[in-house]
Length: 116
Image (cartoon, rainbow, N blue to C red):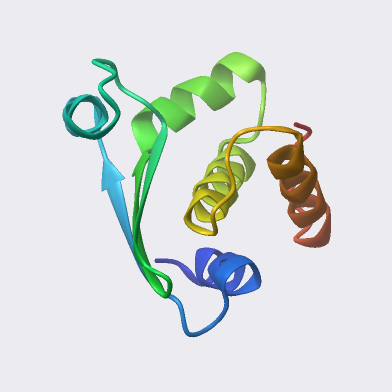
């Protein structure tokens, strides 16, 4: 994990949280998404909380790069956003307005150049 993501992880989950981050491709993401979410398609991120202080995330960087390009967004900033999104899932957030509000707060605080 690069220093930027380490800092983001500490901001969202704290220094004592043990995180494993895996770069994955479409094939692995589809397999995991099918097995754990019963959705037979690829996805950009998956989060797996293992305990209150430990979790694992998978990020599909090739798909993130494609999505960023399609949306006209900087790839690095979009990847940072996906990382934040996955960390919030580990923290217990579900998709919805509360999660969006927290994503916006973190994006602003961490100076990530993206609008969601």
